[in-house]
Length: 97
Picture 1: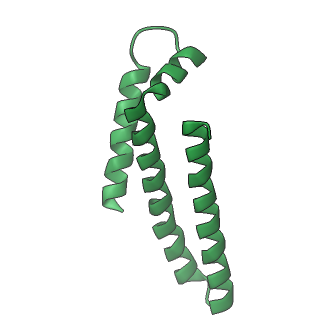
Picture 2 (picture 1 turned 45 degrees about the horizontal axis):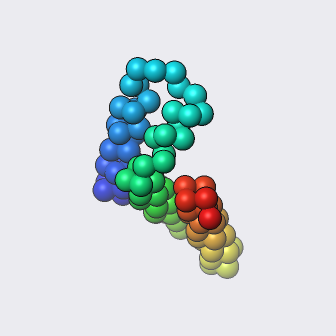
């Protein structure tokens, strides 16, 4: 989780550096920031890091507080499906597939 946290912090710094540049912050500027392939890749790696980071945290909550094995398994599967769905949606948004 520490590695994923560092990746998310790095992404935040890179994004803030681009947003704080002089000029109006509108749709055209946001589109220009994310039109670069390296930024799309960094954003996707950050989304994957966020999904893994969330998985580890939520999995621990399910294991600590949900005692019936069947309910815990169902919640874990639902969490995995949700996180994979979010990652798939991110691919679609970033690369407009």
